[in-house]
Image (cartoon, rainbow, N blue to C red; front, side, top):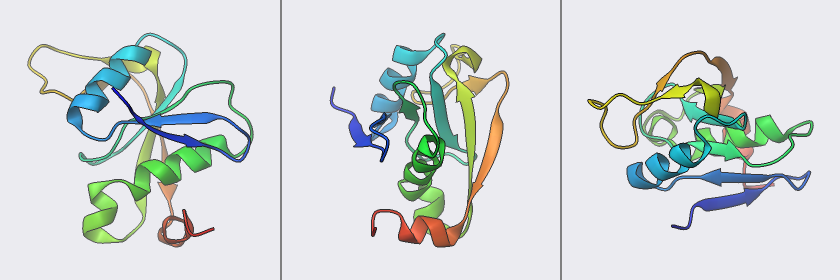
Length: 122
C-alpha cells in the first residue's frame, strides 16, 4: 500500500493516508509507538505520521499537509484545527468504522487559512 509521502525541508518523511482504508493501515502501523500523528478535528482528512526524529518546523509542515488535504478545507476554506497525538494515544473499539480511531489525549493546532493557501505554492 503506497501512502502519500512528503519530505519536509529538514528531510523528515511525512506519511499520509489517501482514503479511510489507507488511514486504517497507516495508524495501525504506528499504533503503540511514539511517532507524532495528526488528523483534523473534523472527519475527512488524512492521518499524517512524522516517521523519524522531528526537527524544528516539521510539525507545522505536517499540520499544513493534513489541513490542505482535508474535507474541512475543501468545503469551508477557513482555518482548520488539527489534532496532534502519538501512536500511544490511539485506540480502536470494535464498533468504530474503518479509518476511525479514538484518542486518549491530544493537543490542537489551528492552521491559518493564509498558511494553507500558501502551502504547496512556495
